[in-house]
Image (cartoon, rainbow, N blue to C red; front, side, top):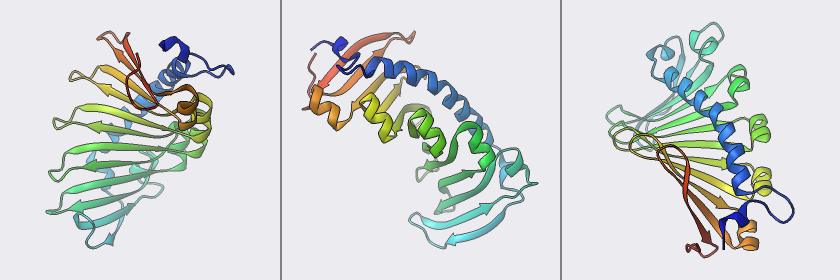
Length: 229
């Protein structure tokens, strides 16, 4: 089996290569939004002026879960676009999970309805999950983006989940993108939908990249999960 057979299905539907070009263009906007959100979240000022209440006295981490609600006129609401947040604490009083829900105005600009930041028992960030609005998902085909971090805090990989319509059209269920120790893109893993895997015999395509971001070795895996090229 040669990789070029994956370029386009018999019915003319674009598959792996055209999907990657479209996805790369779309990701440029998502990365910009991601950086902006990080700048927002490292600012301590967002917690001031909030109406707070305890939702759970003892959560799964052993601490409290507290909700903060913001209103028009608050900088956090007007400038940062945060409507409310829920903080889940562990013991001793270390945040384990932070949920942030954005206003309609903010979500209408970048398509992010809310995000979740997850931390380990030592307080280190392990994952940030971005959830997109229905309108954004319908237009771009992405429902969720998860960014994973290693022990030193560097981003290790990203996971993209797609809408049913997008997956059906492009034959892809999800995409994983990995980064090396210097933060450079090292490889993509594209997972086929069950239907496409059954028809084509291809379950996954792995595309490796060199330091300049150029495509190197491409690996194709069969429906049984074994390398076929």
